[in-house]
Image (tube, rainbow, N blue to C red; front, top):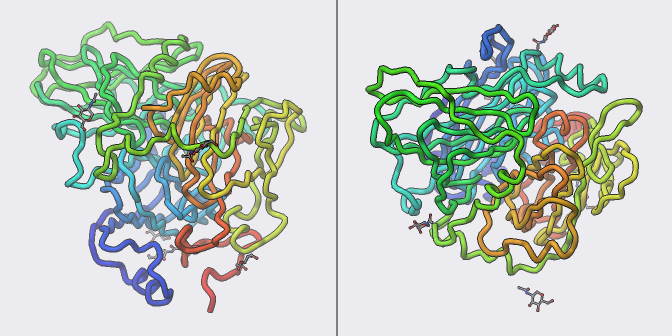
Length: 546
Ligand SMILES: *[C@@H]1O[C@H](CO)[C@@H](O)[C@H](O)[C@H]1NC(C)=O
Ligand SMILES: *[C@@H]1O[C@H](CO)[C@@H](O)[C@H](O)[C@H]1NC(C)=O
Ligand SMILES: *[C@@H]1O[C@H](CO)[C@@H](O)[C@H](O)[C@H]1NC(C)=O
Ligand SMILES: *[C@@H]1O[C@H](CO)[C@@H](O)[C@H](O)[C@H]1NC(C)=O
Ligand SMILES: *[C@@H]1O[C@H](CO)[C@@H](O)[C@H](O)[C@H]1NC(C)=O
Ligand SMILES: *[C@@H]1O[C@H](CO)[C@@H](O)[C@H](O)[C@H]1NC(C)=O
């Protein structure tokens, strides 16, 4: 359910009067209201009945459509029988990690309760998605697309497409989310996924209808749990136009890799004879390979799509690496603001801190765990952001994860890395394992300056792209390879740094980055929301002085 209004809701007005400053309420930016009911419901994505998590009765959930700087007010009613939270992959939550919806920032919404997220898509454009962040809820659905459009007067570097489609794809299990969690809790890895879905449907299930001669935008996100995918359109090419909020140089591809948690937009022109075609998604770097299809349906076609399916890469790493390096920023295109994206010279800013993060698989207390710099994250009973606000000690300690790999055995810790507001960090992701990694950082976007095989050394810096790489929020690291990002720490808050592989994240491959400003001012960070849920050691506290 959505309603748009430019006037403030009653309770916001109340907040404004009670507080002496007009904190996060940003002038005349429009408000979009959503009331979502989260329920269980029967779904049949692979032909067998499963209990899915529906948002407003839908699987996948309804799409959020917004324009840069819109305020999104999403009131989520948890009608499940277990605690629930939604997080917003790629929404930057500027000054506002309070609304990030991960367990390190928010108390779960208890069954029968609700929580209203109050967010602004400040200075953002692009394609993202939301997802349930606790346990293995994501394996049951609860995800949906988010699109943030440019404001009307800001030029977009291609003509308006005839249609704008969301394509959410990813691996899927027939085993339900509680059983998946139990497998992992008992110290085992998940079995191989049972299939792939496109917009909640199995092979040949979903159809996108196009008119011959017209051009369409597809916003593709990998919402799966454990595998990278490749996507291709039979008989058609894709022109890449956007990667997580960056307008790209518009290269043409016959197939594209999309790693876990990543989003991108392509333009596809329906320039072929009017019949139906397959859209094929297959897994990458797996054995066996899973494949699924959707249909690109020309509106006046009565012909079913013909085999053979277009082939794509399967295990080739260099192919993927070369493709990733070909993603470039269009320096002259306007981003969320009218000035060109290239006017921020990310390669000329001095790095003030280098952080090296190495992932590893480890056995702790006889159970499979995953770690970052040997630390395997365990959640605390009190969300870290909330413990931090109330000065509750004993929940976490700062610098409980080292800046560099130690190559020691793994250990459990509620790991939080301290960082200074306005630092400019170089983060080197080092992957010594045989599995492709996908890393996401909440609350930020970063420049992917380099990636290559082998071990990173200081000499690797000579190969960085300091001119026109894309800025994004999720990046892959190939097997036995490294990836480097530059990231301005311009957003105060408690931010989840995580593997987008759901098993690895759940079993410890994540931590929180606490970006701190000594000024402790509402200019740098919004105060705790009045409606914040409080739990654990913060139960019963107040969000506002009396
Ligand atoms: C969800 O829960 C709320 C509050 O508990 C209730 O008002 C609403 O009717 C429920 N919705 C559904 C679809 O069950
Ligand atoms: C729950 O929803 C009601 C409106 O139905 C709203 O007034 C209240 O603020 C919401 N609760 C939270 C914690 O956001
Ligand atoms: C998952 O399946 C098991 C049986 O395998 C069942 O006991 C459990 O209730 C199911 N959980 C959900 C959330 O459907
Ligand atoms: C870059 O953006 C500009 C708009 O500023 C557009 O005219 C141009 O075609 C784009 N270039 C490429 C290579 O995509
Ligand atoms: C970066 O550091 C160099 C050498 O320390 C200095 O000369 C230069 O002015 C700095 N650049 C910026 C943009 O601060
Ligand atoms: C937490 O401690 C800081 C620094 O001592 C103080 O400024 C702040 O008011 C305290 N917060 C609360 C909620 O007590």
